[in-house]
Image (cartoon, rainbow, N blue to C red; front, top):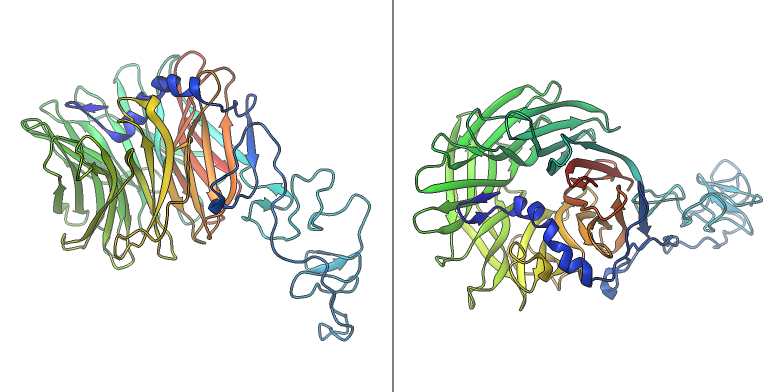
Length: 523
């Protein structure tokens, strides 16, 4: 969507997809597989700079450092007379057993013909066997992590471009999606919905402002009561674009409260992402303002109090040059500070762009502001803060503005930042051709990324990756649900309480349309 001459970050990601043909034609990627299938790789050490790719191959098993052959002493027992490490007795502390015995369900068992899951050998019917019973490490009960558990689509008439812009999960694994749909009588409406952990649609809503123009839902999060809060844009009474927030009851989908940051004759508004402070109930939303008089697009950070129905404060951040600044992602620090990420012009060359992050205290005072970049364009897309206290954010690297020239995209980079100082902890994790639009942190410090990768010929495949707490790649998946050269994209990702990865975006259709898509993948 364009505000003035300023393309919003999320809309640009979708509208630019057909222009990636130039990039796809020069790439060496292979289609991610036939209809309804995924390709998955196993564990990769991120420090090698050679992450696994998914090119229609079957992955090898993941590994860990636990020995399967360590012997126990003869007098080691469980206190019940059953010697540790012997047949039908408990395994030792390292998960090992004596001789040819294998540890299965914490009990030493004789090797059986064909092997068993957990013996460290890949047997018939096993996709992997890493010799442990730990799920979420890339091999779950001898099934590879990243397996598609379910996917759901929603679409309108042939040729319509419906899309899911954001996804979030609550404390019990319910899934909330924000997007838009094309309607027959109202044009483009914002669309929001809730899915159960099993993928059943609990409720949904198509939101129309009642004013000529289009509505979009760009972001979603959950509050302290697991009620979803959505953010997006809609037309204002004067025809310009305004930002909006809406909270809905998790059980029924009924609206709880709403707000609008209106436009005026001089300024249009874009809301790109949001987070709820669960201690105060206040909502922080980020995006951009476009000044129609000076043609100056600036980054926006806003604090809203739902109880008082009032904007507490609003910060506009600008480099004061005729180049776009935009806040595209937001997280909340443990002390209540808000950290926004996005992009700013390069300080030395306004025709270049750097990834950017800023930390702001609850009283709106600025704690720090930093840019991160290279000799290329760096367009910050999304950020995540792990429970362990590291800020990660993903940035598209390109030779030119990726919104204007998608064929210039080189890939993505993940910055690791100290959230207290804004200083890089160490070098970025990796750079590769896949473009990552969304990033999320799990409760165990794992990370998940969602994006797209060009395929041979024409089109895009959905691209997903999960990292362990040490930032080593656990698995990578490319997903293509359609035959032919379709454009399939994931732009947002979340990790549920069980470590499953949920992504949202769009599936390109053979008839030229796009359907809303949400998929759930194993840990």
